[in-house]
Structures are given as structure tokens and as C-alpha cells.
Length: 197
Image (cartoon, rainbow, N blue to C red; front, side, top):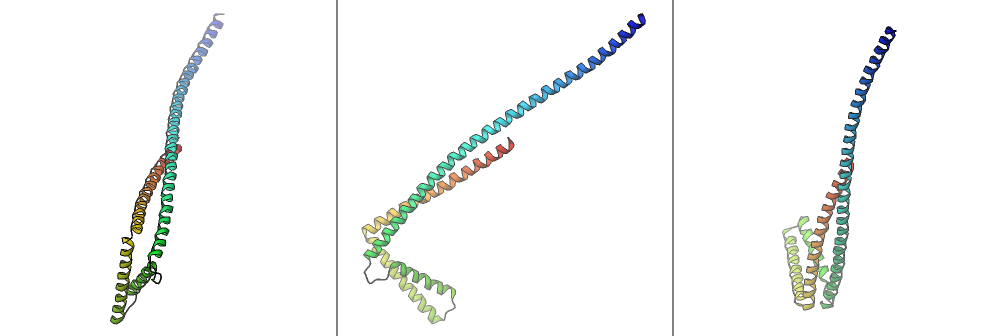
């Protein structure tokens, strides 16, 4: 009987030892599980933060894109206004010119054509002098006509308005470029953060 008791105690000790080994293994696995759960939670928190930042960059980008569209509209409206003023100026020039006079635009085209011919063709001395004289004559006539136009109060006021519109148009063009560049930077930051998340 004592043999049986000894055998049972020995069996119980083996089972208890085995239980201790399994308990220690369980505790170790629980600690690892807890560690990896903390790592997971930390990574999830970082991913949420990256997504939050990316969404904020998207909001900023979209706001800038809206401003780009507004600036483009202002620039384009000014472009249309400038074109209308230019048409009005052309009409005024036609009205102020003597009816038999050659249009100023035609004189300028002829001058430009002769200058191109002078620069690109091989000419005799005589032909070169003749060409330069014609260019100089056209240039004088163009300047005289422009002076006459500029002396006209209506033309002068129109030219000043066109200049102001052009300057404002240029300012809006620069603003469009600045806003578009800034929006692109936010887009790139947003894309990078979404990739990381």
C-alpha cells in the first residue's frame, strides 16, 4: 500500500511539475500577448493620428483649391474686361484716324516685316539703305499717330484703365500660382500620410 501511495505521490509531483511548466508558459504567453496588444494599440493610435493629419491636409488643400478657382475667375474676368477695353481702343483708333489713313496695326505689321527682311536676308548696300529708310519712315509715322492718340483724353483714360486692369490681372495670376503651389504641397503631404497610415 505504501508503494501505491508513493507511486501516486510521485505521479502527483510529476503532474504538479508539468502544471507549473505549463503555468509558467501560459504566463509568458500572456505577457507576450499583452505586449503585442500594446504594440498593436500604439500602431493603431499612430495610424489614426496619421489619418487625422492627412484629412486635415486634405481639408487645407481643398480650401486652397477653392481659393485657386476664385482667383482664376477674378483673373479671367479681368482678362475679359481688358479684351473689351482693347476692342474699345481699336474702335477709337479707327474713329480718330483720317478715313484715308492706313490703320496703325497695318503700319506696325509692315515695319515688323521689313525689320525681319533686313535681319534675315543678304542685301546690297543700296537695298539695305532703302530698307532702313522705309523702316525709319514707318517708325516715325507710327510714333506720330500714337502721340495723336495719347493726346486724346478718351484714349489716354482708356490706356490708363487698361494698364490698371493688366496690373491687377498679373497680380491675380501670381496669386493663382502661389495658391496652386501651396495646394500641391498639402496634396503631397496628404498622399504621403495616407500611404503611411
